[in-house]
Image (cartoon, rainbow, N blue to C red; front, side, top):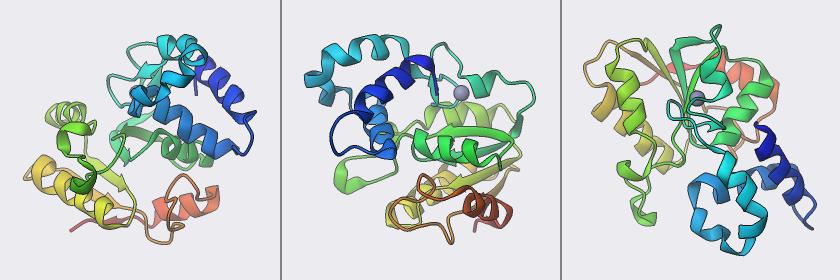
Length: 198
Ligand SMILES: [Zn+2]
């Protein structure tokens, strides 16, 4: 969460029919995932989109090169939790159950919707894995076919023979919303119960 992002979120929350989480998703969508869809909201977005960008390291929202989390010295960056969207990261942060770093993909592989590896935030993940400091990758991706395909791609094409433990959560999380809609207790037990990914 950044101050300018919060400002936009507040504006969206006051639109009829938008709950807090819908506003979060729309704000992320308009700011970093499909900026072209924001033309009608351009004047309202100008301040925020000028200030908020993707963290160059993890893909989280940031108002500088690196986000607040990546700048924190006490986080354990040898363990990275890979999520689809920024609201997943927010949910995990609210749960207080994760002390490692994150990597936000900004989507999942979906050939039907034209989303291939190039459309996801994978280049900076490759940079992080190649640096050799990551020892565990926790895949917190949805348990549908696209989420599974994304997990498979990361395991096979990116981790490969590197000595990185790959684990997976997602079992027992609400269907349809995954991490974003899970409560803190569920997220904590999902993280504690993460299993080795084969
Ligand atoms: Zn970051």
